[in-house]
Image (cartoon, rainbow, N blue to C red; front, side):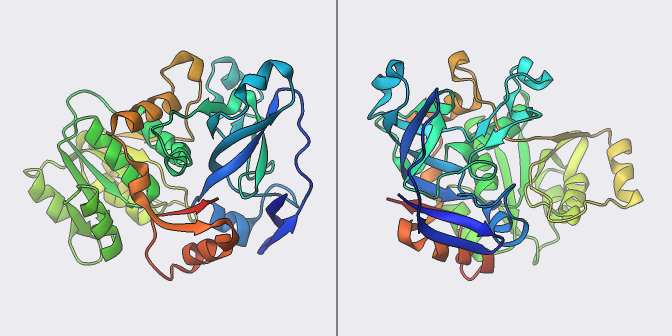
Length: 347
């Protein structure tokens, strides 16, 4: 099969490699769509994966084309999304079914071979069937969309009326869509570019402040009668953005940290005081919950929202590229040569 193999940092080669050999409990998924995650850029160009060679790509969907075990033959031909985290199912978090916090997990696309390939071996327990009304491109965005609702379920409570999102990238705009679905009336986005503002407007979010041009604190205080917002969400991964969140959130409010840090996160003493004196709740979030048999996990909830039309992740796709042009997509994101939100590889 054809696959993009990371042989060393910065060396991603399109190669002919053997088709995966299935283990017990695994199926072979033919990849139909794969999104490039922002985390793929440092993984490929700066930090590497956990070992070489590795096939990256953890946001993907496809069709089951081969099974290992007879009892899974009914899966052949099924359209599926793939939860990329493979939990050990024995550690303390796994015993509580908190698989996203597994202490000894495997992960498709960084620790095991992932979706930048024609085929991927996937444990049956990591599959979720996709209804016919959901496109493969939307299904390939199940992972980031589920990360978004997982984050909000950590902090959302009835009565919240206002929220600000710093960093309207893929996750930021997905969270904005979820906030709207939850009934939040004032949804404010803070970014730095016209491309972000234009896409936000197309998605129905008109309150956008360019952090390079506007005094964000003053603007938000004016918008909220001097109180600040109920919820401030950090989706950028920079200390100064976290500081802004602590500035604009109201007394007794909540701050949600989502963005992967680009470096050390440091707070000045005056900023730290705000956590104390405003009695803020500061909450972190990681990954998403995948327990489809319980019907209340993040992935099941995301599929339901897509079916109902209240969540439209495919509207955030700014680039659709054929499999052969993966390098182009990676370079656009690495070099920031043009505006992008979600770059999708389709086959």
